[in-house]
Amino acid sequence: MTVVRLPTRSGHRYGGAVVGATVLEEAPEESVEALALRFRDGDEAALGAVFDRWSGLVHTFAVRALGDPHDAEDVTQQVFVAAWRSRATITPGPSTFPAWLVGIARHKVADARAARARDARKVHAVAAVTTPDESVATDSALAERLVVRQLVDEMDEPRRTVLLLAFWHDRPHSDIAATTGLPLGTVKSHLRRGLAQLHRVLEEVRHGSR
Image (cartoon, rainbow, N blue to C red; front, side, top):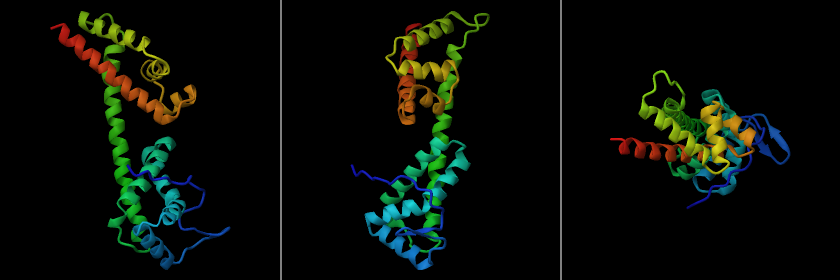
């Protein structure tokens, strides 16, 4: 598997080319096209230059589209990895190259929104069997709630805390990461795997009660 290493996103604004220690406010169109050509030809130095020049544009677009800086950082990284892997499809040009990057960003934002929707459905499904309401709960629903809570309580840390904060305290992913000191990606991984484990056990309980 090819590993694409991207530099840390800098503070340079879109449209500013870096030459030595000097930041030029307007890059000549030819330099943009030349950079696109080097990028298409697999010049790894061009990857760093492209990331430095346009990551601010992509990140701003992702923040405005998703409303979450952490998710926007993930999307920004994904855009440039995807661009590098599909660089052979580029049509170099002073305006087509940044437009091509924004097009990739739109797809990655759509993927991020779809992932959020899937997570939301899973959260609602778990909440439906973990919110106490004894006046209307059937015996089977009560059993499922008890099984879910017991299973979560028996999970190893930090997964137990991550799930409790997410589903019982309704904390957002970024807040859980800050509270536990875990990377955001690790929090999301614990949530996905914990949900999968809960659904497997619930299916066993439901089938066993038939």
